[in-house]
Image 1 (cartoon, helix red, strand yellow):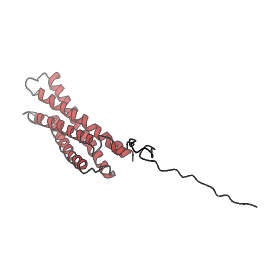
Image 2 (image 1 turned 120 degrees about the vertical axis):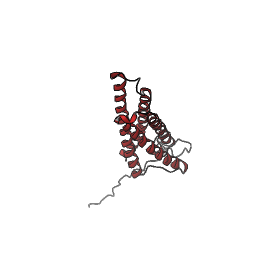
Image 3 (image 1 turned 135 degrees about the vertical axis):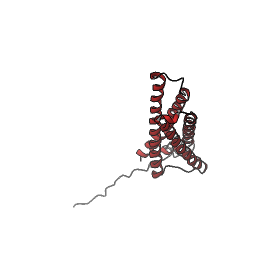
Image 4 (image 1 turned 45 degrees about the vertical axis):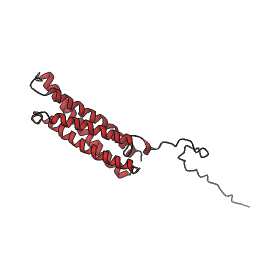
Length: 183
């Protein structure tokens, strides 16, 4: 006589968010991807946006106050890239402030994709403009030796501010890209 036996297929429990400590309510919660500081909608993200805006504005203002920056294309490019970085960082800082005040997560796939593309474009433009301006500044100072006739200190200051602005924009891009790639 052939009797069939019931087979049991084990089902795994869904993972808990409290680190597996169901009995202890005082246990620290596990850190999720959305809780990483520096991401959009966090205080760290707002600090990065504020630093980006500050340094891009400083680069823009320092370069724009010189009278002869329009004569060099790389310096015009720096002004344009720094202006774009200012607008992008200010608009996303406003979005971050809103998200923090209403305690809303900005981890929507479309929003993160938009932030990633925008951060990638603006940080690349800022870095390219800073590199081009640094090259022209070195040319004017070291190779031509005509720093006395030009505003080399202002050019160097604006270039340094643009590099710092890029340096603060890079973590925003990398964190957004990480969040996008981990989905």
